[in-house]
Image 1 (tube, rainbow, N blue to C red):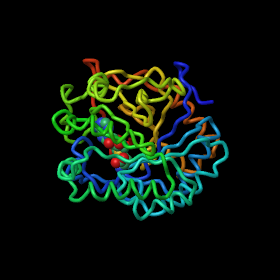
Image 2 (image 1 turned 90 degrees about the vertical axis):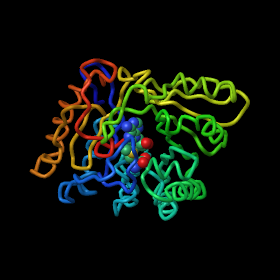
Image 3 (image 1 turned 135 degrees about the horizontal axis):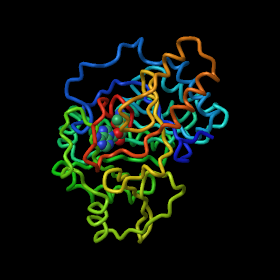
Image 4 (image 1 turned 180 degrees about the vertical axis):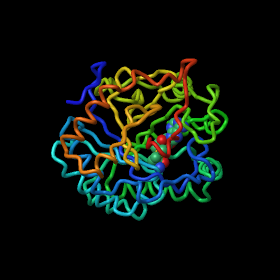
Amino acid sequence: MLRDKFGREIHDLRISVTDRCNFSCVYCKSADPKNYFPHRDLLTWEEFLRLSRILVGMGIRKIRVTGGEPLLRTGVVEFIRKLRWVDGLADLAITTNGYLLPELAQELAAAGAPRVTVSLDSMHPEKFAKITRTPRSYEKVMAGINAALAAGLAPVKVNIVLVRGFNDDEIVDFARLARRRDIVVRFIEFMPLDADHSWRRDLVVTAKEIVDAIQPVFPLVVIPRHSPSETALRYRFADGQGELGIIAPVSIPFCGQCSRIRLTADGKLRTCLFSLGEYDVRYLVRNGSTDSDIARFVEKAVREKEPGHHINEPDFVQPSRTMVYIGG
Ligand code: SAM
């Protein structure tokens, strides 16, 4: 079991398989990114697979494949298929903007039906196009969600990053969407990880505000946590079907129960979303290190995992990598 010096067990790995994304969401990526990594700097699928096997051997139980936009990278379906067979891996999920799901949902389902989370920040086509800075993004993402459901990938989770003044008027509409049995809605508090450095505390719509908006319309009942390290506060509707969740790293930080590490597309291990430093695993992978050399390196890195993210403290420093380069 991987454990840090504070006793937290690390069993979740997020792998960002590419730094490229076809959307430029205002709360995430710059409109004009000039700093994508050259392809030779990205880990190959074989390198990702080798590291996944080593890490699962050390206690990782869940892998989430993310990006950038993971479905943009050729070979991702085959990668998912191979990951499924990694001995000891209990849970496999993918986070996507959904744009390519109409083409790939069936193949993904055939590759082993990973759990799919799709980001959709507005149910108004024009507003969503402004948020993603991509024309017709709403139509494509909705088609993607429908394709995932039709392929049997239910329940599909839908992530909504709430930014005050942009989409906080849609909280109840999204709650209504969550009342469909096959879609689980997750509201996410806006975090200071955006390329444009436009994050301000007053733009964060807090967990309390979200619950206060929904409760009078659709009374909610708390769902007890499956495990202490679960990121979302989960709710069901008092009158029946549907589930929603709130991920509240800003107003209700959950660092004390964090069980996650991240591997970036260029092979850096990050022990916190907000890490200011990272560990170069790609160097080891490419210089002939053995699996046990790599395992020892990871073990040492994990021991030093940061106690918390400091967002609410005066010494907070935004990491130089933004969400699209880290992998959400
Ligand atoms: N391209 C995929 C997608 O759109 O879901 C995966 C990568 S994206 C970086 C992963 C998640 O991070 C998305 O749900 C996105 O909304 C979220 N995200 C990006 N920037 C964020 C920010 N500044 N605060 C909170 N969540 C953010």
